[in-house]
Image 1: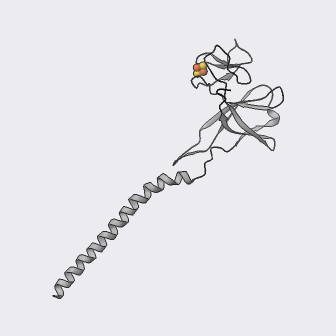
Image 2 (image 1 turned 30 degrees about the vertical axis):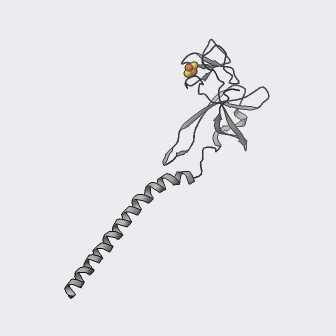
Image 3 (image 1 turned 30 degrees about the horizontal axis):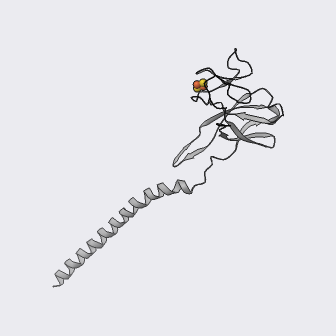
Length: 170
Ligand code: FES
């Protein structure tokens, strides 16, 4: 009789142990994907931050100059440092203008005075797209929208740039 009691007790012990281990494993399997799904949403996005592009405002002239920098980007669990570029200059009013170099036609990179035939314009070598100095697309060339401009701020005499803002439909 005492043998039977011991056998039942062993069974119970085995049941408890297996249930406990199984429950622990199931919790691990559930919590991990749940955390992966929710955690990035709870993290603060840094995409709207303005970045020091290392250019003194005193060095900005009326001649567009290309500025390159990198941004820290967090996309879910993936962290990267993509590079960005802008054409920066002061317009006739002395205001700072920072234009995206990405052609609004099919995304090639435009250059200031990139063609000898079209001085004082941005030129896209892919399909001969052209833009005026203020980024307005030249009618009759492939791009149908102006170049986006970067939001910007000057802090202690240094230029900070944010995200490019589309002027499509402007
Ligand atoms: S990509 Fe620039 S003109 Fe086509």
